[in-house]
Image (tube, rainbow, N blue to C red):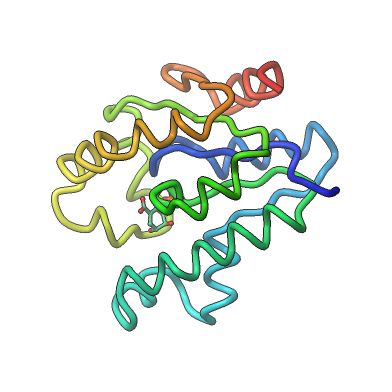
Length: 166
Ligand code: S3P
C-alpha cells in the first residue's frame, strides 16, 4: 500500500506549505498540496471557485482531492485549513500519520494575507480566524497523531519537530 509519509493539517498561517516543502526536501520525497490539486481539478484559483461555484462545491472538490492524494501520494502532503471539517476527509486520514501545526493568532496574522488570498478570511480576518480555529481545533486534534507547536520557531525548526514526531 502506498501512503503519504506525513500529512500536515492546521489553520491558515500555520506554515503547512513552507514546512511541508522543507520536510519533503529533507526526506528526499515529493511535496503535494491539496489546494493546488483543487485548483488543477477546477481549472481556476481557489478565490474564483468560491465566487463562481460557492464554498460547498469547493468542499466537494477538496474531499476528492484529499482522497486521491491519500491513496496516490507517497511524499509529504499538506491540506487546506478547512479540509478536516468533512467527515470523509477525516476517515481518509485515519490510517495516516498526521501532524497538526499549532499556531497562535498573532503568529498566523503575520503570515496570512501575505501570500495567496483566502476567501474565508477576506473580511475581519482576525475574528474570522479565531472563529474558524475554535470550531476546527477539536477536529485537528481528532485526526492528528502528533501536535507541533510552531510558536516562535522558524520553519526549519518546525520541520525538525515534525521529523522528530514521525
Ligand atoms: C481554507 C484554507 C485555505 C484554502 C481555502 C479554504 C479554510 O488553505 O483551502 O481558502 O477553510 O481555512 P490554507 O489553510 O492553506 O490557507
